[in-house]
Length: 243
Image (cartoon, rainbow, N blue to C red; front, top):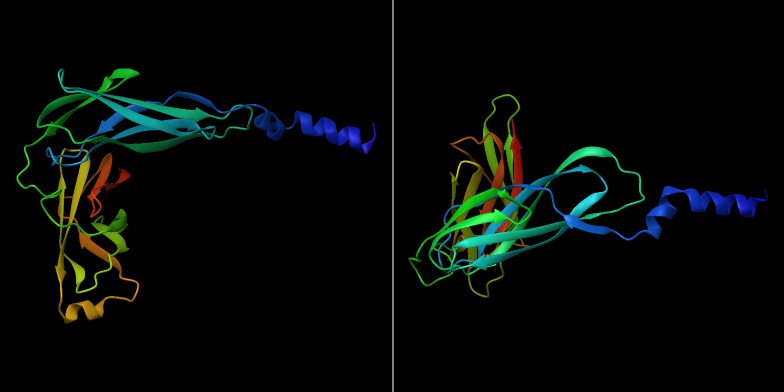
């Protein structure tokens, strides 16, 4: 067999060639849990977060959506994942989370369920708004968040980073970072900010970046969600698995 035919045969039999010949398959996502932070009211963009595990490297997150039935008080979550056939798959447990926006939801209690497994469900409570503004507080423009655990003491610290928005007059500063575990598997973070016009603005870096670290009085253990409210009305959601 000449070199050309040998190369052609190898290419046809290789996993990469097989992967290229087959399109990804969109299948139901293996959702096993729904996280719902407390504190939403009827003028919030309500968000729920779904969680699951992929058992190999041939799967990735797909699409997610929600159907809200106001008459029945039921929210049905649909989610897919993409499976890539024909490639070498490493066997591994890879957790994933995906944020699903419900938009504005009227005051009330709702049952939230996963369409492909209605045993995966949770309760959503939407309160009546106390103010006409989008949030009860002015939140900082956080971009990244994580919980750091001291290996020796076991103490936990919340780390927030981001960039303050540009103001033609004055600047934004973070005045308080409130944390609460509500419900038991969700750490809710409120980075409360203030707009000022004082010499304190001169201490900010030129790119208006910030890094804040605060201690957490009530330590979190186990699997859960880190949910951080932000200035733009969305939130930052991070999966937690702290032993």
